[in-house]
Length: 454
Image (cartoon, rainbow, N blue to C red; front, side, top):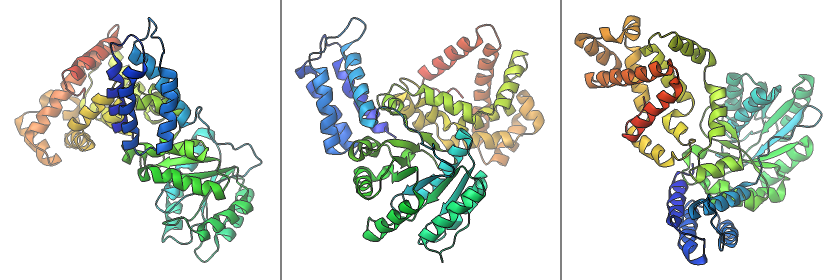
């Protein structure tokens, strides 16, 4: 998300390097470029004009301090105004009510409400420590109820049975009672969508809202619908007292216009952003972090939080102790590192969150993809335990057998063994005094040469 915008805004800000002050003339071209980048990202025109007007007003005549270049000074202004456009501060869920707290999801068909219901349930359960129950009031879409039931079962969430023979209002009323008797802290209600806004949809969702009196009424919107997302959200907001927005499928949209438009047009905060298909792929929306990503400044805090949640701490501790004792980094360890990286969105997913790595992430995407990581795992899985522990025993005949077993070529096996050797050297440096600094220097050298670290 925001890939194109990040690249073009970064290039625009680079036009101010070497300037002594920010004037109307020397920022005019930069603002034109930024304007085009925002419009191409499908940001609503009135949002673009309002944003650029504020940036121009603050930027013109600003003196460049000794510690900041004109580009840096302008970047600071743009960053602050972007944060304001995106909502200022992060706003989580408001569940301060007598249980069960009801969360009602609304939106058009295909926006991802059902998947979002399960993702939100996992978030509330794992991050907030609440008992969650899900219910589907979608009696129109084939298999909608069964889909949510399957997702709830897989995520270990409570589920209230419903049937297409019932009315949505009857389902919601019964689910609320079930949540009370089963002592659920939170009830998440998935509602029916339509291909377009119509009176029947709005009447139905309004009745559900009156009956449930939810503490949160979240509008679920598909990021890939661009500017239409914001307009649809506004129409829903005229009928429902929305408390927030969830932007879904953000990983499939390189533009990001929906996120930049929804907050300004609806006046409601974006509370969550969905990036990925897994039930864990839901993040709190932090305007400051998103603005930082757009401007190529990285998002280290999100990277740290993601690592805390997704890295297998037992395996990481075991590997650290192994390295400290001077024992070798074998191919089983290498495979574990590949799997850990995949859990965090792969190499490019991590690079996107590192400061100044936006362009490098694009280059990495051209060289490394998930298929490549899958191939590496397949090769290692085709080895015997002895070969994984002692790679030096892998002779020509063994390489042929491994290549056949993994559906790859001998050259691929050789490439893997070479990459493992490089990683092994880095791990040895980590085991010495000042090891982490040594390893980072080694990785930096490899990246500068256009090579991947693994």
